[in-house]
Length: 111
Ligand code: AMP
Ligand code: ZN
Image (cartoon, rainbow, N blue to C red):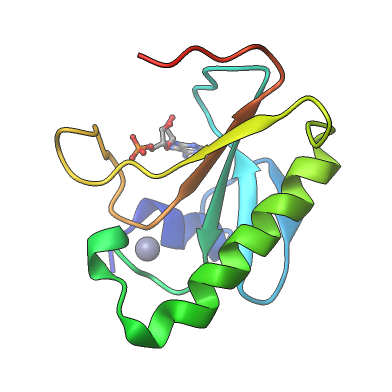
């Protein structure tokens, strides 16, 4: 399968990994929009939030637990941070492998 993030999971492409366990990988976004900008991805290839099903309930819950761990590791637990998914074209989703953006390290705006 020709998926950029699956290649990052398999270490066929390099990335700056900040957290990894058996189900998730978290790495620095290559074009950060804030001092802290991490992508947290399930190792299971799921294209978008639109492609999750009832069988993924546990995995998606665990994704947020992994995000909390990453927030702590990145030192933004106290200062706060944003978690977001881009879903589809209007949101600007560029990579079709589910990824949760964790953004922080500065005061964030909301447009
Ligand atoms: P999205 O617009 O939600 O699909 O986000 C895709 C994100 O992946 C963007 O913020 C990109 O900067 C980031 N990205 C693309 N390629 C890489 C890469 N090889 N390593 C790290 N981040 C990447
Ligand atoms: Zn993938």
